[in-house]
Image 1 (cartoon, rainbow, N blue to C red):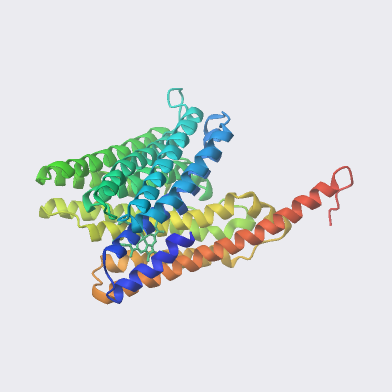
Image 2: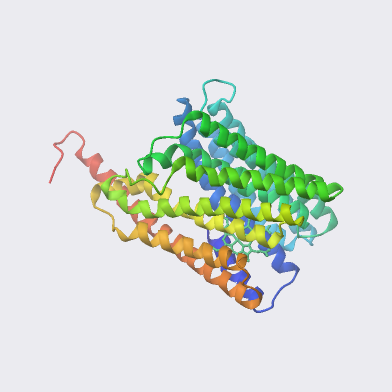
Length: 422
Ligand code: HEM
């Protein structure tokens, strides 16, 4: 959180001051990786290991997921340390070891989750399949990264080439993170909004179109690595269109704007944040689909700048907000805080405004045509809002943890005695 979000403020500020260079691009890649695999990725793997046993009533092998966590975390640290200085052989080696540890961690998480989710056993839910797909894409991107980091180390370079990086970014953002969010969202969002769960065939249809769109998109990007060519570009754009349409359709399936809230009174203020997540997801789908449709009609490519902006709408407005809100709804520390006293009602509303606003400054305004210095200052404001939000979340978590410990100690003291009810 600290590495990724601090760079989110520093990178655009440096760019606005004209301080661009190889180091800037290397740090931009480190920021992306720390955010997607570190901040968001570790949360997603953690939540998946909690939810997978509930989806299938099978226990998860706890020791191996702990090993996976340490492999991923230490790998991330080494890679972030090594890449910005990878023109020196020693740092290139550190970066490569980091990549290898990450790949081993991802593979172990995939095997552990797959053994619990059991894709070969029927009946399965679309949510379970999407969680499995998420772990699969985490592993694919980690293995590809390792392969391409090896090339960087050999060539004494520190920036992944744009075409390879694009493929990794789509696999991470829409393969790993979106698949997990869709799997959890299909199950939990209708409950939060008091809506009926989507019929199973629709949920399966949505999951299939999402994965098909992603595969076609990545295939198009993969073909561009070799030969390039108009067909590969159009294939990638068609995949993006399919995926964007599926994402927009999830909004219709859940119908988040039609319903009220079924949250307990102490958590009801989070309904605004949950609506903001669903609205940002709908916006992501619409932007992906519209930019791809326009590119197909006009026979042009969707630019890297457009994709970077849309990705950030999703990564800040959906993923970061979901982490901050779901964390407060599901972590035991916050649950025992709610038992002791009613949490302040401002929380849900403040996060519901601050993070979507950060997504507007970082993604929507640049996409709408803001350019030059103003574009980078706008991004920096987005970075500050994002950093302030995650620091607020960390402070709330730390406070809830203290209360949780006191609460557990008090409950342990009641054992065998009459429980004081007042
Ligand atoms: C909070 C506000 C944020 C700001 C201001 C910000 C800023 C930036 C900037 C300036 C870049 C470089 C773009 C370029 O190369 O032209 C970038 C790239 C990126 N950011 Fe962010 N970011 C933010 C939040 C996030 C979050 C929350 C995530 C993920 C959870 C994320 C993931 C990425 C990724 C994956 C890249 C691409 C890196 C690459 O080129 O390899 N960012 N961001």
